[in-house]
Picture 1 (cartoon, rainbow, N blue to C red):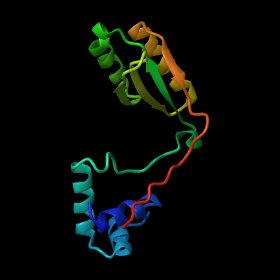
Picture 2 (tube, helix red, strand yellow; picture 1 turned 90 degrees about the vertical axis):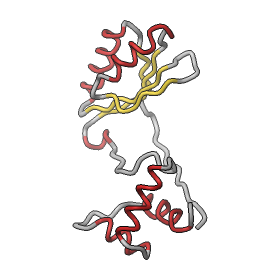
Picture 3 (cartoon, rainbow, N blue to C red; picture 1 turned 45 degrees about the vertical axis):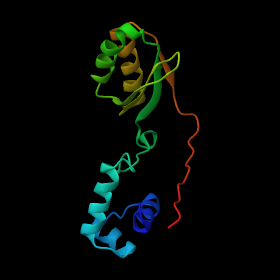
Length: 147
């Protein structure tokens, strides 16, 4: 990662232009071409420096809901339960953890009622209790790289 990559990461954390040509606008602010910006973003994603590039939505502010949930899955059922949970369109991420609660996943829905229904459906389909851990407070930790 060079200084331009660091500048891209620093600048785009502060916002992305909402305009007819956002990449061109962002590239101009960085002093590079739109093609170079796109190529660098693709390279940062491909090599794993960035895990994703996209907007962050505050679901609650637009009437939606999201939560972190966990399940204690017997190891002999892990693949089966993974398939059941991942089949839910509300499941955004699913991670195995080295913990008593060994499966953690994020649910996102259009309404709080849909969230509760999805949690109940997962419990019913897996036969396992789902531990719902909704966000209480949100914290933003800004990452700034020296360029």
